[in-house]
Amino acid sequence: MGEDIRSLLAAYQDKVYNQAYRMLGNREEADEASQDVFLRIHRSLDEFRGESKLSSWIFRITANVCISRLRKKQLEVASIDETLDSGDKTVAELIPDDQPDPSEQYASLETAEMIRAQVRRLPANWAQAISLHHFQGMSYDEVAEVMEIPRATVATYILRGRRQLARQLTAALGKDELSY
Amino acid sequence: MDTRQFEKNVAAYVEGLLDEKTMLAMEVKRAECAECDNLARLHENILKALDSTEPVKAPPGLEQRILAAIEAEDAEASALQKTRRKALAVSLSTAAVLLAGLVPFLAGALEQGAEGAAVDAAYGWAIAGSWWAGVKSLLAAAATSDQWALVQLVLHYLTQRIEIANLPIAFPGYFFLALGPALAAIIWVTRDYFGNQQKLVLSSTYRRGLI
Image 1 (cartoon, helix red, strand yellow):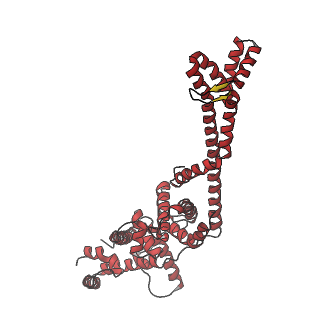
Image 2: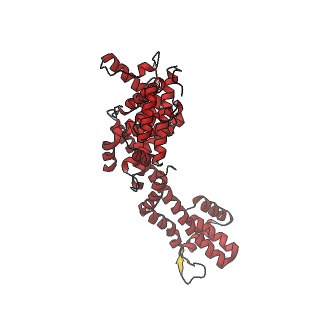
Image 3: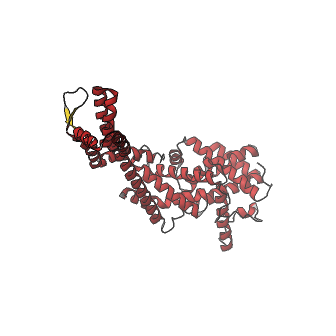
């Protein structure tokens, strides 16, 4: 086994796992997907010609593995360890105050988890673009390179995705108070 | 700007991606429309939640599991290559041996006509190592001849120089007897070379996910 794969593992395993987790929504799936990703990398490392950045190539493989898993298994949107339990929350509760009350901070974390869970209900391309931009901190240009699409399309995916996210959240709360 | 337009632009607005004029129009609309303000706050909250997402670290042991999976796959691929290498060597050996068995037949056919060729073929197949075909032919010969005649026939074949077709070269029968195993031995000794050639093909096929 080459040193290349070991150094890639050291450098990228957290990032790959994070992306897989954000796309798939549960740790077990993310774990298996990460293994698949690195096996694919190992198989095709010799064929990587440096036409794109190594990181873009790796994230592209990760996205492809995750999308393929999502399609194959028809994963439930509500994940195992990130259940979407909106309960009786209102839109007002989704919009936290600035007061640093501990219980509100907890509610805010819960809300954030709920929002992240909703990302996986978006169409795969939109979710992928949002995940790469917001969760991996990539610029639109970097996302465009990973997804091999124009930058303008990335912007469209992300903005439409967030609009859809707002609709989903509102629908999940059972509120009609926001009409779009 | 109406509410629908506001909703269309709100995702870009909260990220500050709009031009100055549209940003200003959005601010004005937001100030005068409670529903729009509510929507903008929801989008701000979504953006905040997305951007504040802490990266998740890979669980302990994942690296070891991945390395073990890679090692297992390498071992499997290596075993597959070895099997295929052996299969290649065996098939090439067999082909060479059969070819060697055909030489006397072709020589016989050209020189002695079909009848003589049939007898030579029996020798040919036997010498070539196609044991069943050879044994069957020799048994058939034994059934129609006495044993001494058969021994004489074999000895004659082994010592008689046999021309290859009309070429100006001739070899004794034992040359043909040794030819098949010799070719097989050469192929076996050089199997790594064949294996490496095959490995290149296998490797690229494997990478393309065809195996």
